[in-house]
Image 1 (cartoon, rainbow, N blue to C red):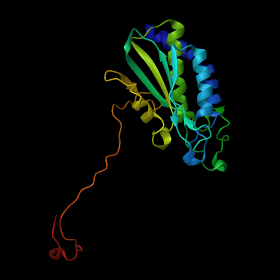
Image 2 (cartoon, rainbow, N blue to C red):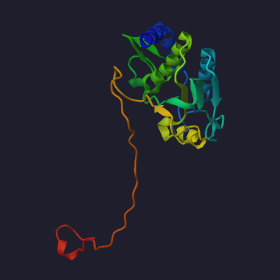
Image 3 (cartoon, helix red, strand yellow):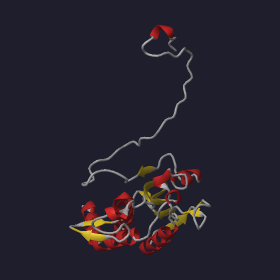
Image 4 (tube, rainbow, N blue to C red):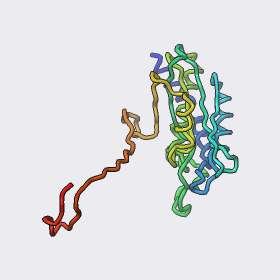
Length: 228
């Protein structure tokens, strides 16, 4: 079966995947709200990795942000063309990480000095969202190595600012008109160890303001009040 060949090809890339993830962990990508310089350095190295894989097209969409030294928050799109180039399968991951917190509480290693211990990679951002980011790259690399052309174009989006509201990340990309009605979107930013847990919706917030007319009173004297 083709799926078995793809999984086998991915397994063959295990060591390179580990090294790639550890390399990216070593590059802090922290938002300016938390005293960081943003994602530029990580984005530049990530672009080199994508170029080495040989994606069909790589684009960058920078959002202006004068709070970081570069004045920009980078977002990268890498395309692997499918049979139908009019519809995309998007895999969206983020480059930024949360601050490391109190470094003395890190018991296995320092936040940006990743190590492998008992089959796990320790370091800030190894899980959120580094492992999914690297997995998306090597999934496409496996297809490319085997000469598999997907039905849809696979578009990998590596966004900024996910941890602080997404204004300079996915919201910036939405404004560029990149996403189409018939596109499929996968956001591997949660789940369980064996990958069997899949959500088909994303929770959000809805703010409402309601005006009522009445007379306020204490619960001990309800007769003095007027219900809205």
